[in-house]
Amino acid sequence: MENFEIKIDKDGIWYYNGAHMFRKEILNVFFEHLKIDECGKYLIELGPERCYLDVEDTAFVVEAVYKTKLSCDSREQIEIILNDDSCEILEMNSLFTGKENVLYCRVKEGRFTARFSRKSYYQLAEFIEPSENGTDYFINLNGEKYFINSNQAL
Image (tube, rainbow, N blue to C red; front, side, top):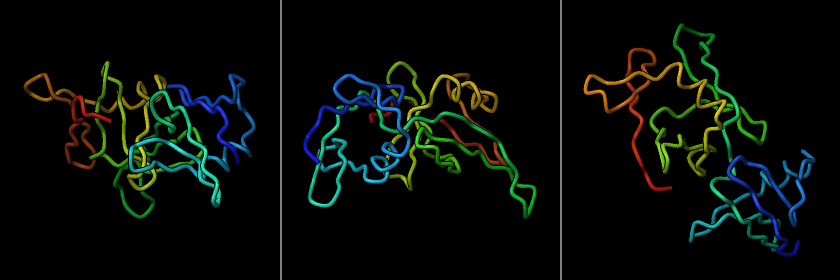
């Protein structure tokens, strides 16, 4: 694999030389081999070949949010669907806002940052409450308050 001009826009849409890449089987291979180097740059690594990507914000985007109950008890969890079609349990302590109050979380066992799409942000917003001081926000899940950190650097 040579270093092609692959770009991922802020909405998680992949492009090759300006053309939209839409074939899921190809994108799934790229997602499986996606890495971040020691300088924070995204790349696809297939064997000895490395292809760096131009990523506008994050490679992963949260597309949907669901509150579910564990089958073994009545505890709730929040599940997220990512743009690689994977489903994960939201790591509640990883929520933070970035520039322009965009909401992010950590995914893939904390290896990557994911940006919430507008749709998924509004889905999660149903569970967000203001704190007593009115400047902090949290999600109350199973009797625990999970605060959303403000303006963290990516």
